[in-house]
Each structure stands twice: as C-alpha cells, then as structure tokens.
Length: 256
Length: 157
Length: 86
Image (cartoon, rainbow over the protein chains, first blue to last red):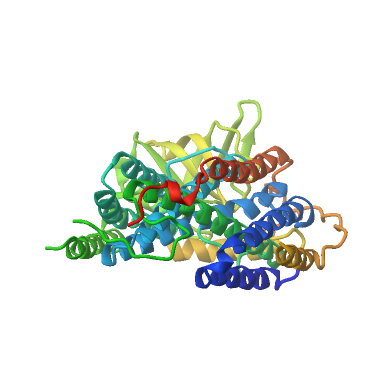
C-alpha cells in the first residue's frame, strides 16, 4: 500500500464530513459516499491484512490482528470524545440536536469498543497466553465501556427529555474521565498491555496498513453516527413534538 | 434560575469535578496503591513481607537462565528488572507451559508466590509483548528489539 | 449516485494502486542474543490463523450486524405524522 494512501483517504473523508456538516442539501448523499468508501476500504483492509501485509517477526501471522484491533478501539475513543463535546455543548446551549448527537456517538462508540475489546481478548490468547487478565489497561477499558452502557441505560429509563438530556450530559462529563485514564493507563502503571506504538516501533509497511484501516472505519463510524442520530432525532420529534427533521431549522424552546 | 443557567452551572460543576478527579489520579499517589505487578527489586524490597502472598512479578527473562524439565513440564528462569547486568533478579519456577512467544529477553508477568528459599513459584505465566511490530528480516530485528526493550524498561523504572 | 460511484471508484483505485503479487515471507530470524549466547529459543508463534480469522470475523460481522440494527431501527412514516408542528 502506498505511504500516502492513509493521508489522502483521510483528507477525502474529512472533506466529505465537512460538506455534510456545511450543506443541508448534501446530507442526502454524502453518507452514501462515505458508506461506499468504508465498504471498499474494509475489503482493502481484509486483503491487505490477511494476504499482503508482512508477518510480524515474533507474532508471525497473529500480528495481522493489529489492522482491525487498533481502528476499532480508536473509533470507540473518537465516539466518546464526540459525545462529551456534545454533552458540554448541550449544557451550555440547549439544543436537541446536540443531545441526539451525544446519544448517537455514545452508542456507536460502545459498538466499536465492544468489538475492539473482543478482538483484543482473542489476540491476547496466543501472545500473552491468557484470554484476559485484570491489568490496568483492561480494567480501565472495561470501566469506561460500562460507564457508557450506564449512560445509555440512564437515558432509556428517564422519561422527561429535559431532565434526561441535562443529567445524562452531566454524568457523562464525569464519565469521560475514564477515557484519558484508559489511554494513559499503560504509561502510568505497570501493565500487561503494551504501550502505544509509534512510528519508531512499527514497521512502516504495517503502520500504513492500520492507519488506512482507521480511515476506512472512520468513514463507517461517521455513517453509523449519522444514521443513529436520525433515529434519535425522530424519537425526539415524537416525544417532544418538535418539528420534523426535514423542516427548516427552528430552535426548539426548552421548557424548565 | 432559568433551566439554561442551571445547565451551565451543572456543566461547570461536572467539568471541575471531572478535571479534579483526573488530576488526582494522574498526579496523586493512587499509582502506588494500584499495583498490577511488582518488579523484582520492588518485591525484594518488601523483605519477608513478600513471602507466601499470591502476587504478580513482572520483568524480563534473563538470557541464558531458561532451563526446561520436559518430564515434569517445569521451566525455570530468572526475571530481572531490566537487561542491565546489575539489575535485581528473582528465580522463577513455573509449572505452566509458557506461551509460544516466550523467549530469553522478553517481558513476562508471572503469578504465584515468593518463598523464603528465594524461589518464586508460579502457576500462571504471561508474556508481556512490547509495542514493537517488525517484519521479519528487515535488518537487525533482534538487536534493535533488545535495545528498545532495554530503554523502555529503564524508562519505566 | 453517479458522483458516489465515481468517488468510490477513484478511492478504490488509489487504495489498490501498488498492490503487487505477495513475495513469499522470509523465514523468521533465529534470535541471536547481542552478547553472543547461543541456542536462544526463537519465541515465534507458530500458526494461529484461527485467532486472526476470529478477529476479522468479529470486525466485519460486528460492522454488518450494527449496520443492520441501524436499518431495522430507521425512522419510518411520513414527516407530518409525528405530531403537531410547534
């Protein structure tokens, strides 16, 4: 894979996201393009990961798991970060769109995180020798995912939309603390999980693979969040009797 | 108070609490109470207190120290803090067949207990992979990896 | 739709641009200790494709499953149905 493939595709994907955000008329088709990007990208990743990429010197073929494990856990963290930005945004400027986007990104983040942890566990068996061990990284990741599952559970149990939005946002700001802890756990404490890799520790032929894979899954991440956002919006519009999604934007009044 | 002002107060409160919690975990002393494994030097520093308790010991396998008893599936080796010759060392006796990645010089975490005879008897042996990913045969793999894991181990201690 | 096909094809072309026949992977090097100790175990994983396939199945199967769940939950009905406009 050419060295510039991840960067070029990242620029394309981000450009499309900006088009989506900036132009209401583009919203009908941009997600389809990104879904196509993602689908083809995943096919490329599978071909690259299983057949084209070099083996790892010691992990041999098992090292090929890197091309799916890293993108998934990264997308999980991206999802939770989008979520906390929306949560803070909602509390400062009550906007139901931000509430819907927070819910959507949390759910998509949980999806990517759960798959990523599952893959990590499978990867641990041949390399570490165990499926699971309670090291700081695995503890903090588990706590982080449970926090967000709790966040969604709280939202589904709370009837009043205003209370739900405000208190779930407040809770998830506190819950977001688990993300930096998860990220830095491998540096702060002795752990079984290795530290973050960087360009110095990864063969360029492998690095280009997981960076490209990350961009492909980023495109899918965007599509998932957008489609999940539409679901949240439609639920809001039936619960809040807001104007439907396609109507001209009227900022809904938030009742006390 | 309007609901918007209330929400802003909630937000500021939550951010402050979250930031304080993070700072407390990052810069406070929680790390000393949250120990996943001891290095040999840390375990030896406990003296007799370390005997008998089930603990985890982590470090690097000292090159040349691995010996196998295939009849009883026992592997014995020495775990050191770092690759430096003068690093603290503990002899380990493991009844578990090690994972395939086990080799001299690699990081390991063993679970078991230390005894007065200065042997750490382990029932669980895990390989601690570094963050290195290299294609085979791209020049100097073993040497590079050695230096890297060396500097990483030094950095951590 | 045309735009979509065009951009998708362009992107696929980029990604495949230099995919060449796979050279046979070199055998794993025998690990040699820098200080010259011989007979160091190589510590290289043998096989393990089952784990690799399992992970790729989780990745792709999970993605398809989640996409289907989003499709199943998609908003239905005409826009006017969702209550009076405010």
